[in-house]
Length: 546
Image 1 (cartoon, rainbow, N blue to C red):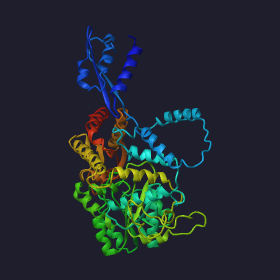
Image 2 (cartoon, rainbow, N blue to C red):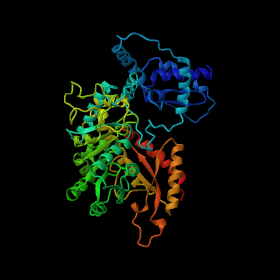
Image 3 (spheres, rainbow, N blue to C red):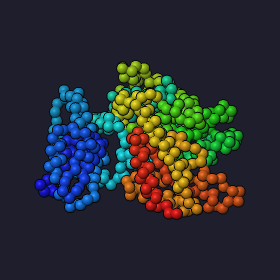
Image 4 (cartoon, rainbow, N blue to C red):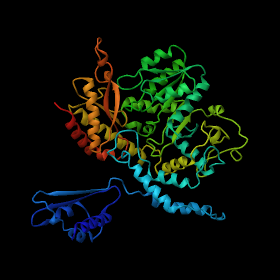
């Protein structure tokens, strides 16, 4: 048997045995005079009786190795995609809904399309493996297969949720899906809709804030997302930053100092900062609202879904999430933890009456949009009265497919504390706590002294004699991890978060230091944590020299 036949048999063996996302290990021990196949049978449970003969026929004992054993690892990194199969039947059903219409020619160059798609697939290979558990860098979570399938199915219609005329079913599904997100924060009355991003959602919230408190400042933590300063500039609203404590949370003392000036109209409270996942003390900020009278906007674009597992969080974060229903407006991004494709943001207002700032008339768009009710299976009108989505959004054209995908996902995975979706959040947080524990037990690393991660983002400094050396080690370790297919991120944090600076400290001692950062937001990260740690530890062993 020649080598080509060997690989053909291996390919056949893979077809017989591999399941989506599986790892098949073929263990073959080479000796001068014999084959040892028994280890293989202990490693893999066969799904087809003919696999034994296939493996025996590989005849790998003739390999040129002598006495050392060789292990062949055949791994399927990207899970087999269920979406094409799911779409096939669903597409037939959708087409049947319009079968009464007369046919029309739909000619296309199928071969040309296939060739271009092949090029596209190759080009897309120039990416980090965002879908894989070894990608633990930025806030990138693969969309659920159902979300991808529902989005693609909706694209057969390509609805536009600016008005019911452009997307009747998808507009209804958006209302229902947004109501479920509002229910997650215990709001029964609300005004809200989907947006193309968290940035647009925050823009709408701050735009309304400016309408309600014209001429007053907006303030947020120095660790709040930079988009708030930019949005405020676009809206011609003054924005000020509040210092953060070494935990990454907004300083309540510094906030009250600003509030005493009497010109603050809105405080932006972040539940899940981008850098470290810090949770601002919403409960304490709400207590200040009673004294000083200002609007509270919660930017929970990243951390909003952790409301479902608030009871499992440490006390400061738990108290903040318990108080989220008292906010005036909330932003949550389904395209982060909500298992949705980009872009899908969501803005919610506790008082539906803010819709008066959106309302307008159009002579050419809204012929059938006088009132939008929920689907009969979930009765109840849109809170706030007879409006349509085009009247409560600054964006005009919006992808109805995003609403369809979100609606479908939430039907499969309801937003309830004890559900499968919430369990996935717990798994990511468990992985983050375990990584933090391992880091604290290793003298090479220094996690934040303020305590373990509040959500599922872990950051740590590399121990070195100087901040410059520590920053360089972080960069070198980042590269060494990537060479091992472990993809982390880098973040610059204040040195003071790791050790209090002396009164006469130099600028170098009070500046910033580059740290490693890991976002463990995939449920699979829990099971992969040991392998992540092994690669991290090995990479740092190569870069950290005594």
